[in-house]
Image 1: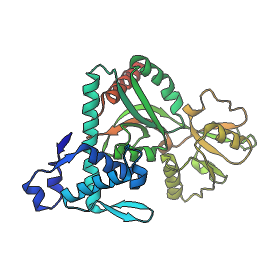
Image 2 (image 1 turned 90 degrees about the vertical axis):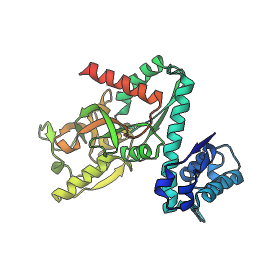
Image 3 (image 1 turned 60 degrees about the horizontal axis):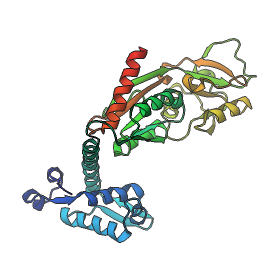
Image 4 (image 1 turned 90 degrees about the horizontal axis):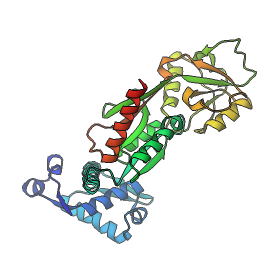
Length: 318
């Protein structure tokens, strides 16, 4: 199948593009995008079920037709040129539209087939999505749910690149995203049993920075927000460890390694008898979870059905 890349004529200053429409093969664009995401031609080849020479030839054809250099070849892989970043951005947009079109045609509005590409952080998401995914599968058994677990910062990057259609992230969201509010939860401070709470039901961040602090894994937005508040207030932050596993964090706190703060939802149903808990009285650090997607994205029928079901769930719970 071929597609006319008219959008590129507005961005690439090449006279030949202004005079002639450039017919581009969808397969070529898929290979080009695979090279970017895999970081090289040899690593991209099995992803697109082709040989390395086929992938290399496809990218070379795109470069010749657009009269631009898309990649810089490096010893450890490849890197996009400035023109290449532009071509990659448009290629992702075109492939998103193509994928959405084929999925909708195949399903014939009945959602008998399709893929839901959704991401969420490992902390707190089980309580939000476990029951929902069961109901979604019961309603649309032909939809395959592909989940990705990362920190919210990493998930937002995957939304921008088109690797995900939907992702759980935290308010405030970047302006290029549309979002649906799911949950507003305070953080709960976890402390060893010997921590001098003196009967207090809530604490401020100022009360915690004199103790070793267990933070989340790289890519979690709450890390950045905790760090920013500490810098603004001139507070030291004694980071001792990072983890994205709730049970592991509970065990570490109970053993006396340090203190931690988790969304209250993440502690539901878990044994917290080995630690002390108190609410974290910091409005900026509330866990305000939303489902986000790109404003200009052409969402698949599966993603649209997911949004509709979540909207109905949140409306019913309100």
